[in-house]
Length: 94
Image (cartoon, rainbow, N blue to C red; front, side, top):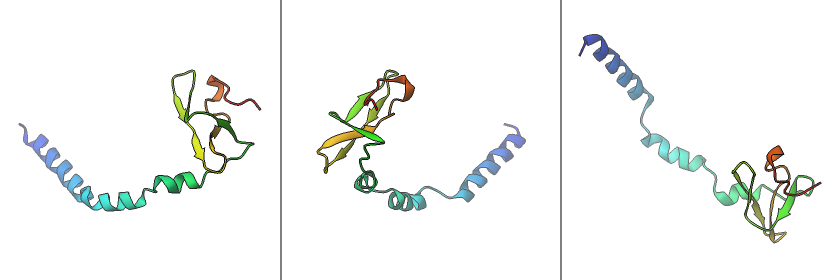
């Protein structure tokens, strides 16, 4: 092995070591991640933006599966009106 490559390898290792490991971030990352209930609680049904669906997801024509939100108040799932965009299907006509 050439000494130039070894110096480059040592430099890369030194730079990575200076950034620190992931051990210190594990506790911070977990604390920064909101609970599922916290993120879902902020979303409320708006009849101008959402429509009620009978299942927890909608399959778009391009193969994507778009997930709906549950509302205890409505007793149903709801999803954004344009969840599949122009690809379709039209989930809830205006």
